[in-house]
Length: 158
Image (cartoon, rainbow, N blue to C red; front, side, top):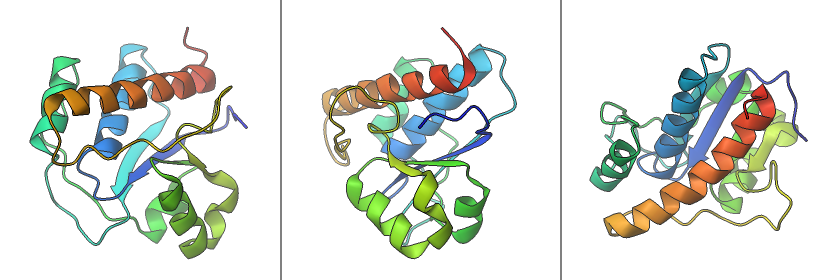
């Protein structure tokens, strides 16, 4: 599955205020830290919402890990984001099915985050919206582990 020609990655969750902004922040952090500037990272949500800041706990858990997503504003998925992406990584299997149904050209580039590079069974990343900082921290670590594996695989970072 991994493809070294990937230059635009789109992370997708429901409202684009927790999981996908955390994934975007993690990916951008890793790329910047390793002086890689030729991969575009975006995120969006499947729900009818936009221009909403990330949840307070998403901002906090990212900040605790040296990542600033405080100025992020949510985006709703659209044709341009899907068309521009070489790889679409969703937080839940329902997001993947929705995208593949609505956007015809997404079939061969949309994966569940945990299935893209995995040697174990894939699973949905739980939605922490409204949960405690501890829950957000656990979700952050799940996302980070998978994003690190993907970025490392695509870029050769070790």
